[in-house]
Length: 476
Image (cartoon, rainbow, N blue to C red):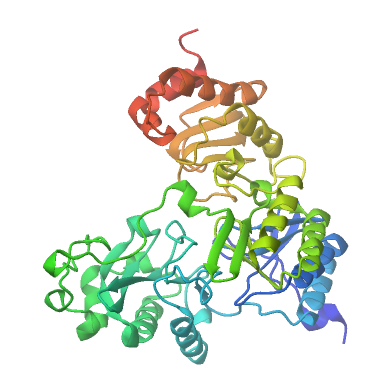
C-alpha cells in the first residue's frame, strides 16, 4: 500500500478549521501542517523536526501564539512524507480535543496548582465520548494553574483558572473568549472540575457542531453545574457573572490568582526560575518564525549544554529546561542568533504573517515592514500594545483585535485603530507610504507622549480621529 493511499492527505479550505499533519491547510505559500505537544520533548527532537521542515517544506518553522509548531511550503506529496517522518519520531503529539496547560505545568513552583491531573481526566473522558468529532472544529479548553506563563490572552471555550483561598485551591470557571472578556461563572472544587468541563462540552454537543462556549449563558451554566458551583457564602465570594477572580473574600482576604498581565508578564522571555536548581530559558523566534537551520543550530547547542527538555508555549515562545548556567549560556547564543530573549524587545510587540514574497495572497512584505517598525518605533512598542502587520485581510497571524492593525490590500495599505484587519479600514494609504506611515506613528508618540504614560494609554487618549489624521498627514 502506498503512503499516499494509506494516509490520504486532503488539503482543506474550510475556514475555522485548524491544520494538522493529516489535514494540511492551503495557504499562500503552499500547504501548512501544525503539531502540538502534550509533554516536553528533547532539543534533539526539535532538531529532527527542523530537519524535516527543510526536507519537506520551505525551511521555515512557525511557533504559534498557542505554542504549536507549523511547517510551511508543503506540497500534497511532501505533506504525506512529513506526516510519516514525524510519526516515526514517537513524540507526545496532541490528538483529539485541544486541552491546554502551561508548558511549565508540574515543574513551575510559582504556580498555584498543577493542572495536569484535571487535564488527563478531561482528555480520557472526552476520548471515550468522542467529543472532538462532535464539537466545533476549534473547540479549546484551558486549564490554567498559574505560574510564569500567562494564558489570559488565549481564546478558550471553557477555561479553568486556579485560585488559592486560604489553604485550599478553587478553580474559576470561565466561558468564551480571552480571560478578560469571558463569562465568569463561579468557582469549582478540584474534585468537580473535570466532570463540569465534560458536562459543559456535552451540552455544546447537544446544541450542534457549531456551538461554542460563548453561546452558553449564565443560567445554562449554573443549571449544568448545579450544586458543584461553590456557594458564594461558603467561599466568601460573589460569584456573579461579572465577578473578577480577585474580588474580596470574607474576612477581608483576597483570592490569590494571576492578575491581568502587562506585556512583560504575558511574554516572560529570559531566565525563569522554576525550582531549586531548575530554570527555563524562555525565548522566541523574531516575529514567531525561524529558519529551520537557525533553530536546528540552537537545539544542537542546547544539547551540548546538556539541556534535556524543550517545549513550545504561548507567546510564540520556546522553553528550554536546564540548570541556571546552561540556560544563561543558551540565552546568550539565542540572542546572538536573532531570537527574542527579552520582553522589552520591540519585535515581541509585532505580529506578522509570512507576507510577500513567501505568501501568494500577500500584498506587502510584512517582515521588511516589521524590521523598520522595530527600529523606528521602538519607543511606541513599549509592550503595552500589539502592532499587527498582515499581508492581506485574512489576519492569519493575529485574528483578534489589535490597537494598531495594518494590512495589504489591492488598493494600498489599510489601517484600523483598535480593530481586526478584516474590519472596514479607517484609512487606506498608498503602497509607497508603508514605512512612512509607521514613522508617522513614531513621531506622533514622541510629540504627544506624557511622562509615565504607556503607548496604549496614549493612543486611547488621542483617539481614532487624531491617529488617522497623523497617518494621513492632514496637518502638513
